Image (tube, rainbow, N blue to C red; front, side, top):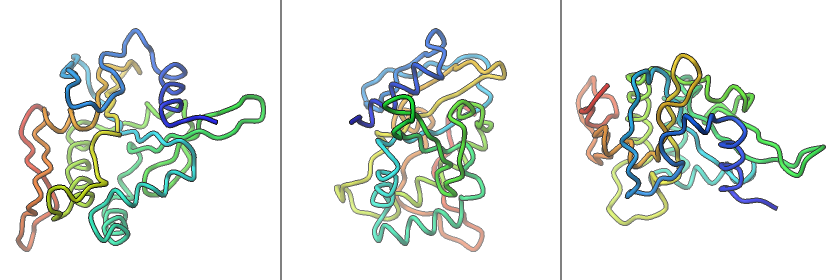
Length: 200
């Protein structure tokens, strides 16, 4: 028996250079995680799950109706999801638990050892994240519940494979001014998106 935090902890101690870890893997809004290093050139978004069965819970986090919102997000973003990963635990042959990883929408298998190497440039990362948050939150009334930025982790890895930045998604969105702004931009050429101010 293990929990989501067990999976997160195992990933940290197995694949992350703890000397380079500059912020906790915690989405707490109070976490002081504005720690940017000089060579943040690849960005990864990770959702930790207890097991494979828990992956389906992601659909319920999308705007109502959840399945429709999820399917629209998948249609728009699946071909861009190589840096957005689901990492979960599975009973191993020689150990109680081993880590598995999948891309978020396509569920393509990723070697957990390669997870941190699947990142993209920050501008591409922000563009994906902006669209993802639009589909996830949509035009919902405040207090609709069930959807939170608190349980995803943003990790930046430099060209040498060292982790230079790590924080909860809520904090990342706050200091990058990524919203969510629940009012979509309307127009014939509009794309789902959020304010893109802040560093790039």
